[in-house]
Image (cartoon, rainbow, N blue to C red; front, side, top):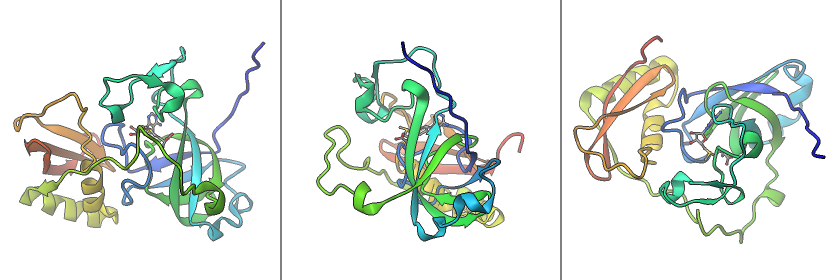
Length: 235
Ligand code: SAM
């Protein structure tokens, strides 16, 4: 008989990403993507993070809380393969997976009692984090590792700015004290649009970063132009 185990979050992520759309598919793809892991009791005391200041990167183990399912899938269709090819779930890093556990290596920018300041994240705001472990270069870097399905980072596409959108992004970046222009460019250069959609120049896309709605279109295939960066509705 299979025994069940229970786990509970050691903290919750406060992230620049307020919705799943336009989050990079892996960590490190957008170094300007920042957030704070807010630890909960009893891990919010200095003792729990003592020594972490000696570490540049950490592994986060977390729950894909917005993709949890009752019925486990054996095969998934990873966006990386265009969404039309199915693969064994254990061959992919898909969010729909048994136990819904995600893992990301992220940069540790600052340590405080109860708070870890992180960048290069790919976690949604509110993500429950189950554990934090130091990245250990001698064991975690595997120089001759290979992955035939995801051999290299996704190709980037050019991101252009309308004059008004760039001025808005500059202004909000100063207000938020965040590298907002870099964040938007790094995320949109991943081309977040589903691979099966061929966007016309008239079609508008949008996603929320921090408290801002960012809207863009494709003036021609494979090129993004940011149209506006405005306060999100309700913020
Ligand atoms: N690096 C992790 C891993 O390999 O386990 C995540 C990879 S997964 C392919 C990345 C995607 O997870 C992001 O593009 C985002 O849309 C989604 N995501 C991030 N946080 C999530 C959450 N809490 N619930 C559901 N989906 C989430």
